[in-house]
Length: 159
Image 1 (cartoon, rainbow, N blue to C red):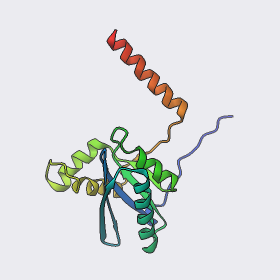
Image 2 (image 1 turned 120 degrees about the vertical axis):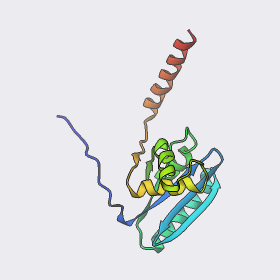
Image 3 (image 1 turned 180 degrees about the vertical axis):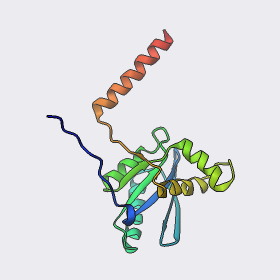
């Protein structure tokens, strides 16, 4: 018997998109609710991230929304604390393609320069257009295989 699982369609009408520009030490947040814009910056620490996300959830609930969707670029490993914390708190999570953000920034702002204020807004616009990538939680055994494959490839190159 073959078992397949279909992707769930999520009604995003009552969900607030929280767009995040992730850096090694800081996170820059941006979101909109009913025409009001919110932007914030915090350090990339789990306890601080958790407090901020709970605050944003409370703001969303005050405005009649049911939850949050956290959207960011995959930036090496720096986004892991944010995404794990968001998942643990029960929020939706998505990535946006970093190349799409760079190209869309030029379209939206007519400027090539990267700034901490522009990128969260661009990520937010891509979220509204639903140009997002699914965030996957990869099992420990699969992560180990990926690491072993990387070591194997490096040993072949060093020869």
